[in-house]
Amino acid sequence: MEDIRVVTDDNRDSNADSVIQSCFDLKNPKSFFLFAGAGSGKTRSLVSALEYINAKMGRELKLNGRNVAVITYTNAARDEIKRRSRYNPLFEISTIHSFAWNLICSHTCDIREWLKREISVKKAEAETKLATSRKTTKTYKDTEKKLVKLTQRLEYLDSVKHFIYNPDGLNVENNSLDHSEVIKITAEFLSQKETLQKILVDKYPILLIDESQDTKKDLMNVFLQIQEKYATRFSVGLLGDIMQRIYLDGKEDLHKSIPTTWETPEKIMNHRSRKRIVDLCNSIRKPVDGIEQKSREDKPGGFVRIFVSSRNNPYETEQSILFQMSQITGDAKWEQIKNVKALTLEHKMAASRLGFKNFYESLHNVPSYRQGLMDGSLSVVGVLTHILIPLHQADLNNNPFEKAKIVKENTLIFREKDFALTNELLQELQISVDTLSACWSEKDPSCCELLRIIYENKIFSLSKDIEQMLENPPSEGDEDFQKISNLSAALNSPFSEVERYWEYINGQASFDTHQGVKGLEFERVMVIIDDSAARSNTFSYDKLFGFEPKSDTDIKNESEGKDTTLDRTRRLLYVTCSRAMDSLAIVYYTDDVEKVYSALLNNTWFNQEEIICI
Image 1 (cartoon, rainbow, N blue to C red):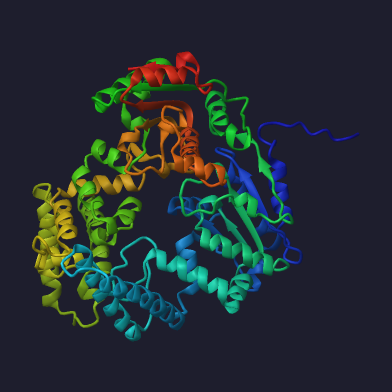
Image 2 (cartoon, helix red, strand yellow):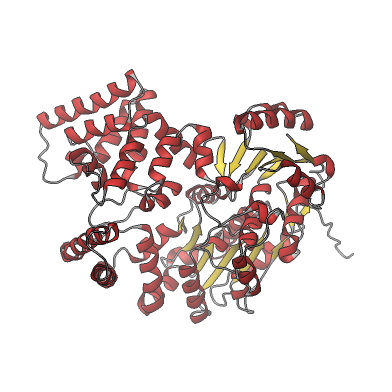
């Protein structure tokens, strides 16, 4: 009798996993691109693939000293996949920066020569700029200082015995590389050095890349080139969703670059969200590719509301919305923000709501600090985030062993070989650390107060900018005056602001950014929209909803098939709305409530009862 398989929500997408598993054959490898929309169980498919690889060829790979590489977008995703794959050493699971560094870290001479070329080019550009600038201008002084730093680094390179890099920040040593350098060097080496290509292919016959739509495009292009060159020996698996590409350094139209020889399985289920939320996300997505997800039969209903409000008092507005959502949904947990994940477009909106505004905005005023500040890798304040916060936590937990461990791993007398460890030195160190502990046990000290104790007692290494601020701050008119002044303003903030900032950056606060929650899910989500709070024209919800006309640049990019402000904003809205499992509140701040309300009534995404003016 013929076996008739009953299709359920649980097995509807199982064919996609079967297609993926069929690609894993060391003698006849194939590559694949898995389209997996929001809540489709992409991580589940990845873990299933790893389990299949381990069962089918794990022993053979281990005997030959080979591994399967898995590249994740975040540390949290890395840790989750490691846990779900039972920490199997067959799988080398890491972020793109860690993976890249592991490939190149032993190539000291090649890295040195690359840096010499790169710095020489920048040095020549600076010299040309100096020759065409007036000596009295700020541009001239800034360029002159840059030239001095480039020259010093260039001269130092020959004395470097090995380079170091920390993917989580704190790259302050003279022989350290920064994040962008690691990516650029790896992409260039893989592109040009056949030996490194063969090392990659021989060591990792299978390379799986999660969130592939946001993977650095330079590296993605190289991986695709290597797969094509070594197609009979090298399998690449890409997992992702082009609708969730929200970072500008990801590869545009990745799906159009996939060779026809690749498998392209799809998953259509959304296991995360209730039906109303899935329907909204399908509507947002429809103009892009028309792909529609199916919600689970056991997840009907769900709540969506969009609240339109003036910008007069956002705190009171959001408190009112929390109460209204509790009434609408019958879910009392909406009444407290701690039970809701609130998503803001810009970090500064979260900073003002969570209480680290002065620390954040002062540092954000320094262009060279911005990226590191926004992703948590800003090395100039690394001593605060990576050392003092854990040290303070150890004090609060009354854990002397953890405290001793932190001090031993980071203090100068243990790190510098020039120091001879004596009882006197160790006693002085203990007194200095006790001074720090006493400082925050009595009050909420300023960061500067803590840093001065560290500096005067030589406890931990400090960044050059902090040392300059403490030793010899520049005078008004000096080229570094603005940078060091803003740094000083930030570090005059209480230490608790840094703790709140760090909690926020690590996703532990009730607020997060639209971009920062990719891959996550929450029962209750509040999406806060306010174009006036955006620092750039990268996104515009007013344009997306039709309240503001497209710019000439938008029209030009649209006609040329390039990414537009509307495209980026649509993807961002899709990502934020699709985080919600049960209920979703969108808060739309505007100067013209009636205009926005009228326009939303003509928008097919929302029913009339779902649009509420405050």
